[in-house]
Image (cartoon, rainbow, N blue to C red; front, side):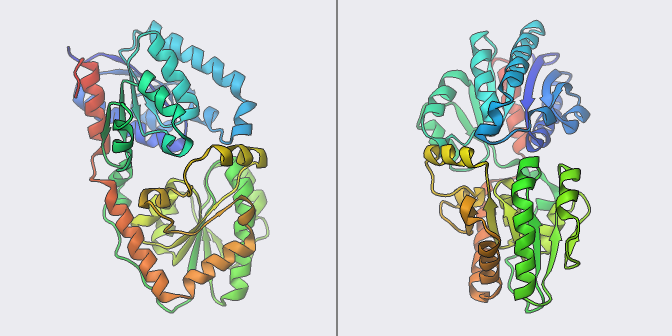
Length: 379
């Protein structure tokens, strides 16, 4: 069966998913020729030719409690997507990350006979076995981007392929940097608080306070702040900051990761990206208190920082919730900057973690799987 002209539903509910999904769509078009792709995504997916029914900005909600308020709207959107997929005779649904929504959507799509390809695994290895059973039931094929995930899923009966990490396709991340050593000059500390409004609200003030404490402790220390997301909120928080903190232009995150001596970074993909440059970091994460209390009961792994999860051990310090105070952040960063041996060892370990992520070409490999499913094949 030819995949040319097929109708495909694709759902990416966050900015990172929009980026990775756009590349998959471009590769799918290259593999199949013309395909009709529609669904949920952002500007990058639109530029790749996807008909956007809902912009991913509408879906950018995190935290268990925060999601509850949006459940009625998300349910309506889910029902609309299923109806659109049936009306357009979709031959495949490609679901990208965003598990709180996409795993429920997978079940409804499976019920109406639409095959499901899941790209970028939900972190079910952190949340226990219940979701794995749902994936085995509702997902026809899974493509994972972290090396340990393939064995995890295969042992649990999921049809799965490790395709490598799509970050390896970013030009700025094409080659891992050499491990760093302390130069002896005044350090530059990068601050990456995250892009979602709730991340900015909870991380940015305490990170800026930590920068002030570090500036007092380490004369000459400079700070570069990478901002994305809610510019109004960020502007309100950063009003009146000291001249030792520079607000970098939009799109400067990789430059900051590369050029900084150390980083204060929100838990997430940024921790893996920073590993490419070998830049030692301290991971910070805060949640709404009730969300944290519930999540702590559910999470089954000791670390939340993605770079630590991939490493299989706590390589980088993590400060979570009540531990994420300005004084603790400043202390951990200073400890890195004042111990040259520890600093160099950590930098080398981070580069080694990056090198476990596979080879470039994840998007093309994932697209070939999707094309095969459209053609009715198994590989």
